[in-house]
Length: 145
Image (cartoon, rainbow, N blue to C red; front, side, top):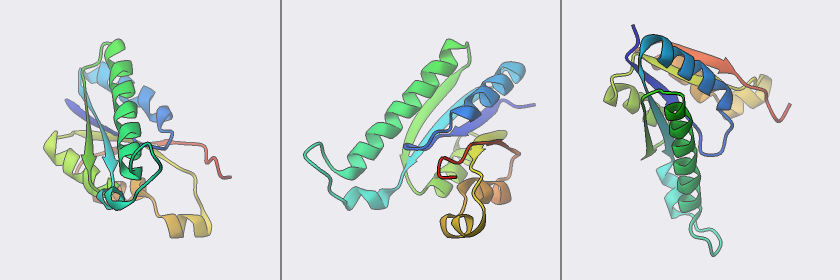
């Protein structure tokens, strides 16, 4: 039923609650999990401290997160492939769905409500509305609540 599962991870967010769901589904269906993280290309022009540009630090965090998730999945016997792309998060997810021919997307959702939800939007909500495949959402605790 599911041969290819997409697991988006944010460079700076905590999406760990989604990992067990992706792992369980991959085990059940013998699927490969594709882990993707997006680094927004607009950040590449901003400069940071001596440790490099802001975008380089974000990209490093994204690579570290993707590598850690891939290692965790592989340790559980799951085929996993990771990548970091330079794109806005929504576009990166939509493009990855097509690129890996994903049958399913597993991703976290924050419990934002009211004005915070309207102002910040929700990548997960947009993916749910636009994805051509099923999307499994995993509730996360809102650290700002």
